[in-house]
Amino acid sequence: MANGYCVKCKAPREILDPKVITMKNGRPATEGRCPVCGTRMFKIGAPEAAAAGVPPERGEAPPTPGETGTRP
Image 1 (tube, rainbow, N blue to C red):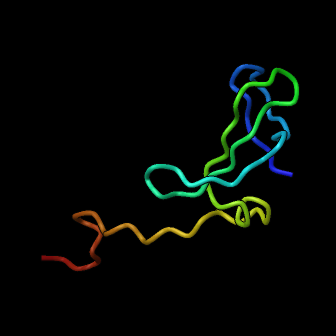
Image 2 (image 1 turned 180 degrees about the horizontal axis):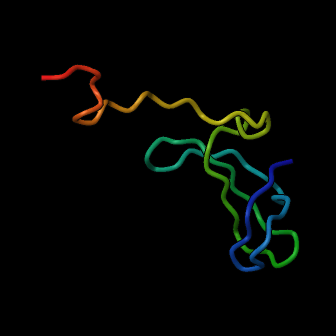
């Protein structure tokens, strides 16, 4: 099952009746209910990566000025 954070209970909880959804921006998420208070909960990110404990892949940030490794 998916874990999430309930903002009403202020505690991490199991997501009850989890459903994989796609948000408006195209990113995957898991939506469900808190088993204690019934508040809607969301877990943003792909469910496979969240279950495996692997952080999502990100592109390398471009170097900032002064970190290019060459001197002018």
